[in-house]
Length: 250
Image (cartoon, rainbow, N blue to C red; front, top):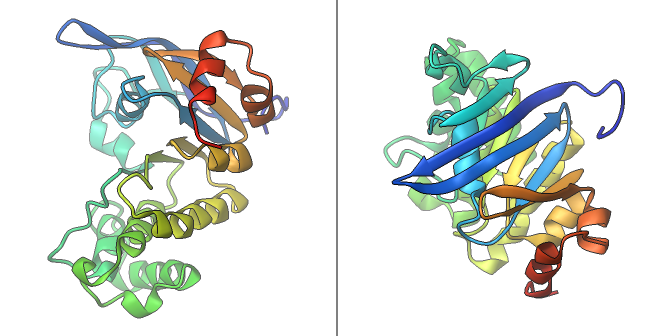
């Protein structure tokens, strides 16, 4: 895990800058994520968390700096974007399930169309994953028949069905009713136990404290503080971190 000599860096960002209309959103981000590690991004709205995830998934191009995935410089303009995205699973705040496809077809779409896995094999894998999270009986339903929590869990299963090298989670509970948040967070806990490498932007501080291996506090586009949950939540070094955490309800 973090600090181990044998740790394998899955993701590395070095000096990453991104601006929109002369507004600096990311200002020199340095971050390394090791294999099987869960890194939580915390910070106020507008601190750059979502933009950072979009940069990693090449939805936004960096203005300066480098991004490496398994040692490959994916920020190189010559990078084949679709090939990189096929290696990364992403789940956003809103589920983005295709309403005209069944849950099973949603989950298997990338496996079949991007990775070329035969339908039977893709569906077998998808049904195993859906069964593991209690949604096997919803496989033939359309998304509008599912609760918000069920839709978000299905979206996460879709993202992991292709065994991505990296999973990005962008505030995956923020659009959910409070009573549905727990079932989504339980799934993320399961993914951690299976060794999935995860970078997640979250406002669920207790969850970040319990599940993350390391926590990065972003402030005005910079990683102001980075450490274990015990370090960041228990004894933050930066005054700005202490101010932010003091405003979070316990």
